[in-house]
Length: 185
Image (cartoon, rainbow, N blue to C red; front, side, top):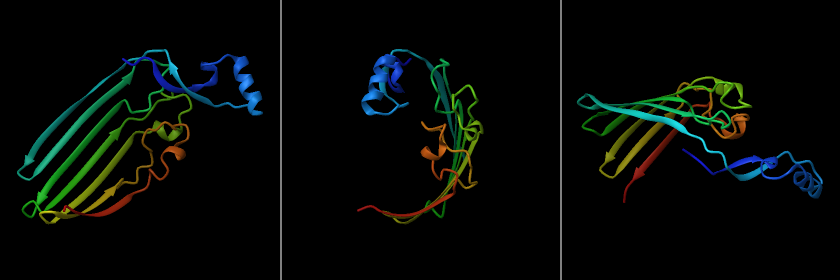
């Protein structure tokens, strides 16, 4: 249960129409913005996550989880998916010198009732696939290759700006490749 949250809201939530008019007159502009303010309302979030780990082969571990989160109040905008499934498979090769990982993430889409000005792209489910390869050169040095968003998923992750996804998730639909080297001293 959450109560007395600090949240962004329109000026009219905190001040009278006359006070908002005075603010606009002082700034010589009609400002339709808002401010951070305490929200007296309380709301409940219900949910949980079920996690499982399985050693499916001597050198392969599978992790899986299902998460559910639901806000019990229609006035609060839910900015995270109701349903989320995570799968990860990690395998080791060459006497544990090479580690290969494959990850999958499913996040359910948002319905029109979840957010008032929801961009259409967020109504789609999100399916992300990431892969990584790590090669241990020696005990304290390794090289890692990561490919994120292998399938070039075009639904961006949930954000505060779900009515303007370009502002919160620029380039989130592109595949990204990272190469790194780690040396522990």
